[in-house]
Amino acid sequence: MFGDMMGMMGKLKETQEKVEATKKRLDTVYLQESSSDNLLQVTISANRQVKEVKIDDSLLEDKEQLEDYLVLTLNKAIEKATQVNETELGAVAKEGMPNIPGMDSLFGK
Image (cartoon, rainbow, N blue to C red; front, side, top):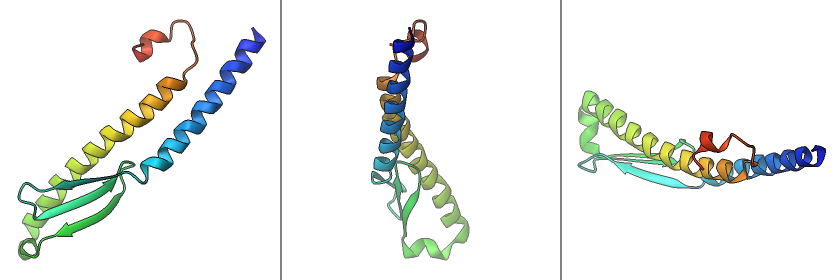
């Protein structure tokens, strides 16, 4: 039994290292989102860090419209990045979970 516990602890440590490596990799995965008319473009990392915002000059004339564009486009970009992030990290975490009786139902195996 002690050997099983050590094996599980080793597997958990290995999984933790894989999760950290995946987080670092997601810093280099960029997603782009644009407003429906392409007047605003946002580039965001899969770790939800805004990397670039491009604003068409026509939007600079109307502060309120620009603010609306920013909110809508940034929220779409963050949602997309969150989906990628959760999918990637979830796959790594699920792959590394030790086989503990009763835990299968929690992770949908």
